[in-house]
Length: 248
Image (tube, rainbow, N blue to C red; front, side, top):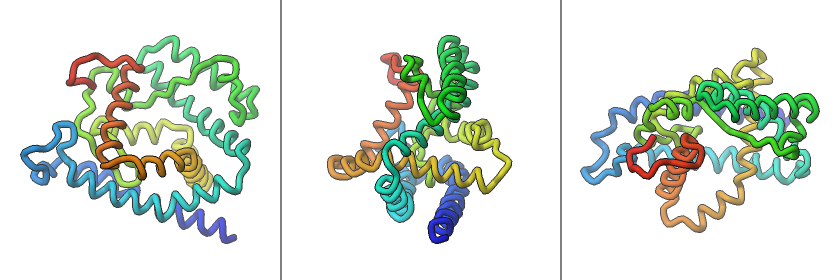
């Protein structure tokens, strides 16, 4: 009962914070007056972004880190791997849709095979048979699809709870949520519970990396921003971005 109550409480808190995301992103567009004359062109809303980052760090330390730490300690690694495989398989469904939308025929075919192999022979995705068979995962989302067809990334923004993003990815977020398998579940209780479990599982994977980042980075915000923007640029270009500075 205590665990169930805590999970419901945590889900409700995160959902409450998440409702701020859209408003914060919209407000960031008119926050140019808060940027100084020497603002980073890729991050014109840095003062607001830093404030939201502090807010996210507070929520992370208060909710996600304790739950993720307990999750990591209580569940055997084999079980956690199965959970990660399950959500990875669900994510592959939306990746397939976006691969098709980007006209990436080989990626589409491989992702289609991954979903079928893992669903049919991997106990609904708990086992990642496809990777063992040499079928690579190609993670795609609607933000990457927009980038593929020439929509620029736009300024860097930090969303409450969701974290680092860009203007393009923020605009794509509702489509990603609506198009995902979890987003199409009608049972609200199951949808919220699985979404929370996915968030906890993801956070547990990065507990060690988060500690290392806290210890190593002179400016955690700047390091996270630059790493995120580079990573997203590589995502759009499948690891081969052009040399120009004004990329997607």
